[in-house]
Length: 450
Image (cartoon, rainbow, N blue to C red; front, side, top):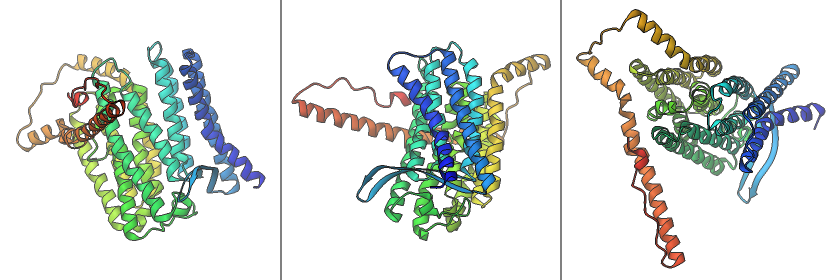
């Protein structure tokens, strides 16, 4: 290993280690019953973000200075057994470096805002611990060089998202909506896990350099056959649709607005909502190898854009309005990816993430400004649409009835499956203990009832 490679790898590991140390520090102190003060928590988060940002910028400087476009950082195998290995590897290229820098910039901005917005909130420590987990998950996902590493970061992002949607657990709605988000994420995660298993089965491993070629992004080449590309690409598209709230999974996005404004800003306005598009960008060589897959990606993006454009016009609260506005742009980004406009999609993600973050952070004070303006102008008389406009209005107001479809055909079956597993586990436990009486069962689907 040359001195340049050693220096770059150390910088690359620092990018990941900074948020990881913050998670371990805050989580460890909370577990032993010594929760730090608000000032210490804020400084730990900001220090981790600043250190990670400086390290990422240093890696970018080295890559630009020495003309590098593809810098792998090997960590090694976590698990290695016959016919399978869990390989951890980070990759710095034209896609991962801009995305990880965007992650640190926006997480630092939102973190500084949250330190004041969440001041004296009973769950201040819990919020920032989940927030640190999210930062770590985004960094790991952005820099992942194998499908296993990407899945690990993907799971951290999903876990922190669901926990922060249900942050205000003293009310009934946030836990219920957090459960909805978690169920959709389970479907998305299952699709990504199946894609990872398929890659290992078809190609022997999940290393992106081996699977897509060692060329710098976006010049990779798929080594899968046509039908293999279609199967793996279809699973990845399903995973992207669930994570980015594309049709038919769009109904959970406004429900996620139950979380605090800082988490809504960084999750569903800036970063998390773009992870599906990032996944498609990372595997863009698969799209080049399958015209049918590209048609599917463009179709999903166009349908989602039309749906979100209709739904956004009837929203009655500003956060739901902004969430559907974000969905329109994410859908257009997906269309750009399907059309092969990779760099345009990347620039679109970077610009939209910054713009939407500022809008979400401005939302609480903007309501007061609008209220003052409405009081000055007076109320506008309401008019009822007629004919086709009436049907479109009801369709938009019900958000395309996707919420009912999601509840009936995805959420309820998943909850029933988990309840059945719980009953089987209790029955097996009684059989092992030879006659113990089980505790009373909760009502079925209680968390899904509106």
